[in-house]
Amino acid sequence: MIAFLQIDLPAMLVGTLAALACALVGNFLVLTRQSMFGDAIGHVVLPGVVVAYLLAGTTATWAMLAGAAGAALLTALLVEFLRRVAGVEAQTALGAVFTAMFALGVLLLEQTGVARTSFDVHHILYGNVEGAIWPAATGWGSLFDPAALAQLPPQIGRLVFGVFVIALVLGLLFKELRLVSFDPVFAATVGLPPRLIGAVITTLAALAAVVSLDAVGVILVVAMMVCPAATARMLTDDLTTQVVVSVFVAATAGLSGYLIAAFLPAMFGFDISLGAAGTIALVAGLIQLTAMIVGPKRGIPRIV
Image 1 (tube, rainbow, N blue to C red):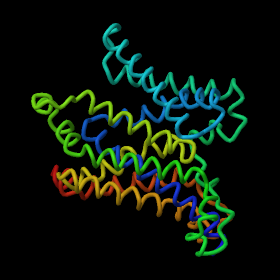
Image 2 (image 1 turned 45 degrees about the vertical axis):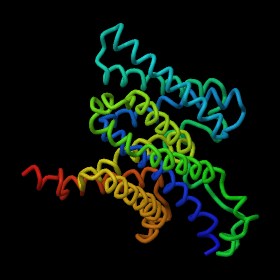
Image 3 (image 1 turned 90 degrees about the horizontal axis):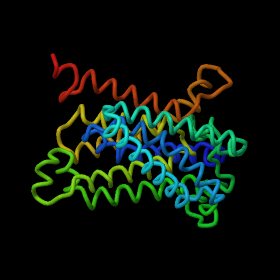
Image 4 (image 1 turned 90 degrees about the vertical axis):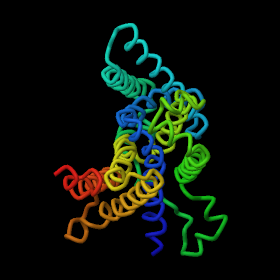
């Protein structure tokens, strides 16, 4: 039990909190047909967070978010330049820019020596969920011991902060986000600024990516920004219900994905474990596939 508290519980919390942060904002990326942006944001923030780490010498949330915001702004400017000046279609421009930005981030990691720290390419891609350990845990009483809780992995604090901020902003602006997501033209006629609301969604997506990236990696960030929301969209037309369902799917994928990765191979006699981030993403994808097959709103039965 102590081993579970020290090794498995914090890793499960990291994977699940990251899934929740990405899934919450992913609902509005899916509704506004910006799912590709969820993929992009997981890539374009890399050079920004590397530069921020080099300048600030810390992986604190404020530094990483500042770097991510700068990278996102640069990406937006480059996409607009390609779209307006070069006449490139918007999605093509976005695809070209985010791959170039990710390549720049990898280059900076390798050439500046950052890749020789724990902040390396492998962890950026695949995450380091298993690296979240809690040596201070000595029993269930540690969950109520302030001194022990203060020694929880720092990733958990960042993720709790990210989930709280994202949930708070979405709650405060829910009506505005609903209107802009479903009818931006009407939203503009009643005085709502669609571009500003869009910037809020972009900022929240960047925040979710920043607090999740070094813990769970790009693969899980991209998967959880799309799969839970897309799954919920297959099952309901009500936005509130969609958000609730997406949160449930994200939590289910986070918890069951980690348990499968950590314990399933041993049940079949293998002395190995699977990558937690990849397994969580796979479970989320399988849940979405199931919803696509049986979903009453937009699944195969509805199409047929």
